[in-house]
Amino acid sequence: MITVRAPATSANLGSGFDVFGVALDRPADVIRVERAERTTIELSGVGSQYIPTDPEKNTVGAVVKALDAPARIQIDKGVRPSSGLGSSAASAAGAAVALNALYDRGLSRKELVPIAAEGEAVVSGAAHADNVAPSILGGFTIATADGVESVRTDIPLVACLPEIAVSTRDARRVVPSTASMKQVVETVGNAATLAVGMCRGDPELVGRGMSDPLVTPARAKLINGYEAVQTAARNAGATGVTVSGAGPSMLAVCRPGTRREVATAMLEAFADAGVDARAYQTQVSSGATLFDE
Image 1 (tube, one colour):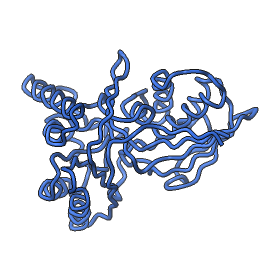
Image 2 (cartoon, rainbow, N blue to C red):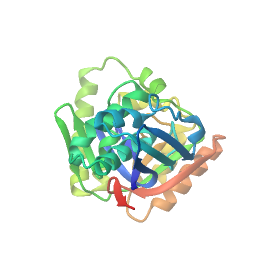
Image 3 (spheres, rainbow, N blue to C red):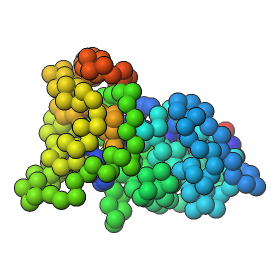
Image 4 (cartoon, one colour):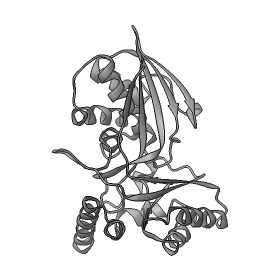
């Protein structure tokens, strides 16, 4: 049996829509695989009752097909579905790493990224790599049509998950189809600032570079209490706050030593808006970890 711990992720980071992503050190999915004549999927953990076990409808089914690696697959969900923390990506990424090892396919971590992205297409309708890339590779990742680049960094973060459901498909529907040149220039500048901040391990630059005039304002409207939570996090020491992935989670970049205060402030602001939430005091971390049992 092969076991893989695949971390939650946060995609977009505001200015890097469909391109940027980071791995979080918590929460995570745990995927166990054994060779079998045909593929079966067993699910447990948070939100598992809402996830199909049919391989044709589960993200890992596409991964199995791509690797020609039938298996008995057990997924213990630590990342809630429809959370904006890469739930489906964690399962697909973990399965790709596990099955590659189980069948000794010999693919590199980077080569596994597009395979796991095909799994993402099952639930989101498109093979985006912005979540699977960091879950497999770790760190801060930049996923484009030309491939994936990753950088190790240790930026402190808080991911706050409200008890609100926002599907990836719904979140994509509100994305503007056009942008002004001013907005494009602003977004490019912010994205470049964020990338430099990640390379330097500088929370101030990363927070400043998260600002986004295009996608985030549209998606923020789907999250009750968003503006109040954003303000509370900044007042508590966050350098930047944005929607995590498609939402409803919110991601805050923190100055060292402020994660607890930021997490508390975000939870209290959501509570004032009548929304229950939980916060993960986390950081940019390593990718999928493999254990040979």
